[in-house]
Image (tube, rainbow, N blue to C red; front, side):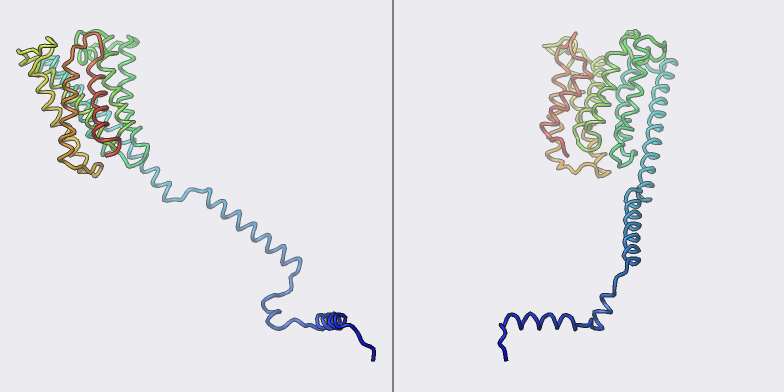
Length: 311
């Protein structure tokens, strides 16, 4: 018998085995034959599923849409409520002035104190949306537009001029009152309810600076040596009242959970801010910066150095 190489015999055996191989029952069950119809049907189903998934991803969830609309309604309603409250406050003091129940200068300063503090006190009624601060800023922004229109004499409003100016001149609206509302806008947009800086600076501008003028006019007999236009009564009142209002407003916001403060260090920091703001307010700045700019800005800087941007 002829001898064949071992490699040739192996090749023939493998070929025969492959040719005689029959698919097992398990193979036929788990690996059914594929037809062109089945393949195209599977591809079409996969493409339809991908299209439906893409549509579901692009469509906003119902809960998210309801949440956004709820925030918009709450913030819009809060804005209208604060605007209406500001109008009632100013109209009320104008009415008291016209009836000669209180003096015009006192009425102007009380509006200076209460309008900013009540505006800030309304911040918790706005939603938790990131856009809530801009809705709140609309309130002083509308007042800013009003001051510009009347300050430039585009429209005449004698009642407004008498209620917020010292000498009854329209151009006065473009100084102290305008700076006041600009500081409200700045503190709202930059700090909002996220940092004590805005709360303390507005408290010093509204409460501290406002009470300094009232007490200085009433009891300002003893003048400060380096500024004869300022008195010890006004400066001491500004420090005490500014400190108390700042601390009270911080406590007010902490009740709602906006701030978590160490009250021992907080009191020390607020006292530092009040002291620096009082010193700046007492400086002779005739022809220089208005108190409605210098007091809140120096309060912001001092509070930033004391508290940091975050609470």
